[in-house]
Length: 212
Image (cartoon, rainbow, N blue to C red; front, side):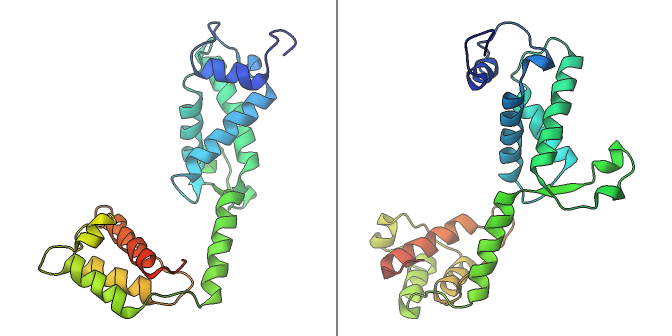
């Protein structure tokens, strides 16, 4: 700040956008900027998984710092290591710190974050309450029959953004909408139609005017 007249956040933004012409040394990236890079890396890994390894975190740090023009590979490695130390310190460890002897076995360590753990806590609290809202069985079955039956899907459902459902999707939709549980979990492999099923759940809830 004293040398450039700019805030560290502005300098980091300029460097990431390629607007800072001089190649950087690790010492040029101050503590505030390193903290922000570490925070970006944590956000990146937790968007893809609920727990992560050292490999996951290192890969995300490499991704968020790749736009920085460093003076040499050695300087990039120094910055990478510094950001990694901050990021691992800001994560929640799920391992025994004394169980790993060297850097390579340490890569098997796993972390999570307070954001993920807080979200899981809220889900468990809702699940443990047991009772939640439910739509009328007749409404859910009518929606399922229109979306998965032999005829054309109704204009009302089409207007609300629904598409045709396979029989197993329709059955899942009915079960979720009428379960009366505080939490339902829909699990399936990629491409199995989870998004379409959840869209049908949303439409059915909206038609029932019930908050969920």
